[in-house]
Image 1: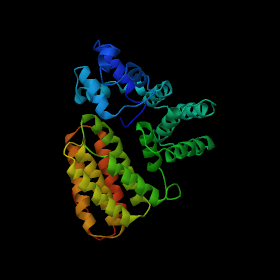
Image 2: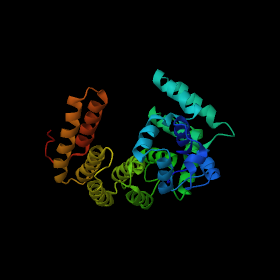
Image 3: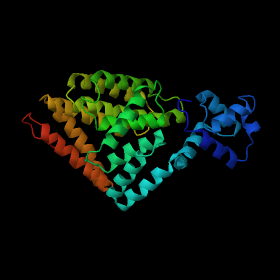
Length: 308
């Protein structure tokens, strides 16, 4: 499988709930020792092998995917659970203080470093702290030295790129990330589609970085390539959402260059977001629509009014 330390424990829980013994599931596919190592998150397995193990449990990939989504809380650290409680109570100050305490520990795990990065972005903390900057540097260095990104690393990189400037990453590096996303966004089965979501989010963040930092020509090229890839992926989860996100980035690229064709794309994006805001009773959709409208108006120098 593509990811180590993410599926083993969940598969073990599923196997035990269905009453299957290690020997029954391993069968003639792998040894019970290898299966034990996998369930202890000590090794990973090829997807083809994993699907054979599912078959020995009388399951298909879609069954596992549904079970995985319902049981991902197994992957949440105790520290993350505690921080989520503070978020629900609206206590940003407690989150900052707790994160600082955690970063001062000598035995802090990489997963907790990623949690801290995520929570500081969630509360949109704008303060300055050497602890938080050092945490970013450590995460950045580890990810850059990793040849194959795992689930946690992908989301860590998304968080880093979302707040990064051209001083943090070069356009060449971001372009390599985009190319890696292109290679990994594909539909092989429902399990691979789970990873597509992570790579799509990383791709959107990378395209936004190029637009935000003025790499307009590269951003336009990569946006168009992304749309073509999405068109080829009939079973991509949330395909329309990602499609609109890319159209929005491309519209910003055009407006920043004073290109009138950006207005047509802007109107399409805003019509879509307005439809969601009017038909779904969720303030987040209205907030997203309003933010998009303000950002478009800020850079629109074409002399053409935005209408939707």
